[in-house]
Image (cartoon, rainbow, N blue to C red; front, side):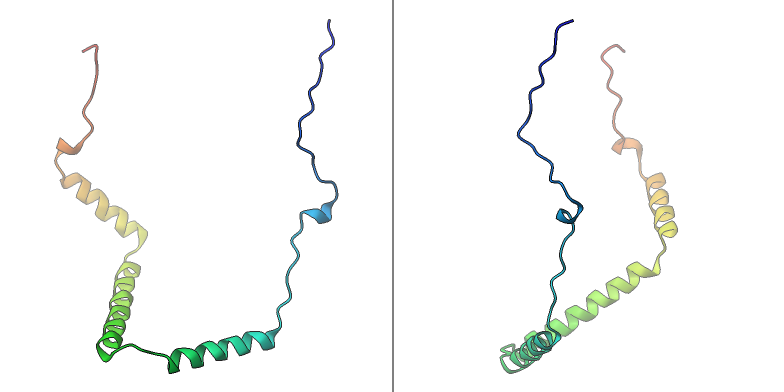
Length: 103
């Protein structure tokens, strides 16, 4: 038998368990509070929306909440049963036709 030569690749594994651990950054809570306060005051003082835009946003939020309640009211089982019933009522024209070259 002939000896097989091994070709080494360019990839090298890092050694040590601490290399793969991510370090958590510490955040100063005082800076968070300051940024929140600044953003709140900035948004209230620089609000350039008209009354119609404000009403539109409120109505859009209400519609979204209503849609979410409708979707959450129906369980998964009910959705599946409704889908199966809809599929039973459909015609078979939507099925994938059988394609055979031999018959």
